[in-house]
Image (cartoon, rainbow, N blue to C red; front, side, top):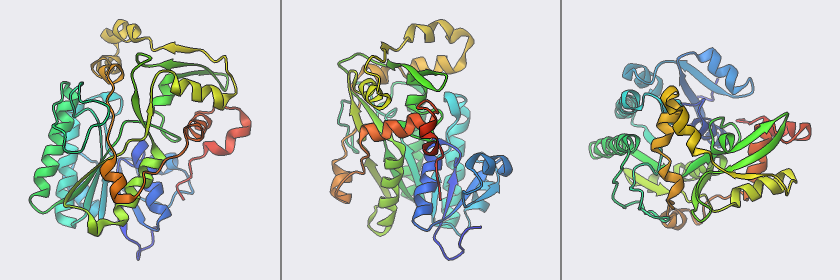
Length: 335
């Protein structure tokens, strides 16, 4: 059980990539952490026996469940996100409305990990927090609508923090960027895909750094605006930068770096919904879309930044493709 004297956070989506790391960052700061799950026993087993989270039965689509779980909490991390891009049009906005209802009753601040989907393909490599949101995809329109509803709620008594970042990677992120950009077999990396043109940069967010940034911002809750937005720059990687980091970490200078087989997505799209949804987002890899973290740096003094090789090593170890010597690194510790 959590410490009743600790500040209490509710994580909606604690078994997901950002939710798990957000829980870890808060636990290290002495927060009590609750998490909502349709099957608490299965969620607790996935998180591991050493994870001191109070798992509560509930569904993020049912407002009453989230309201009940958030009673007494001062923070709600809304990390719920339908996996593999599926059913966004039916799930994303209703889940946020449940969280907003819970925040109204509890007085908790909502934390939302934001995306770059909200911006136009030509928004550029240094998008500021006040840049116009002009999405051109269905999922981008949904994310923009989600933030619009959250902003509207903040004009009527709710408080929120949007922390926007690029593509996630890191340990305990089975759907993170490196999990599908590297091919592996027999406990070894076999090749890595370069997802876009060699001359196009891309923003990557190492999840432990992003979660630490969230926690540092929440530490200064009294200084945050009712609707606070910060951009996390993360690692800006172009050309073969990511592939070269994988080569260094694996010690294999000859590791093949190949163009991502986008044609395969199109070929399999008629029989695979995830691939159909991914096609809509390919523009993210073909245009230099990144985030300006000047406001974040001015507020915190610096953006938490793990070196690229260290971050890649931890991610590949968690994917079990660096050999048995790295086995201890595979256990993502929340305690």
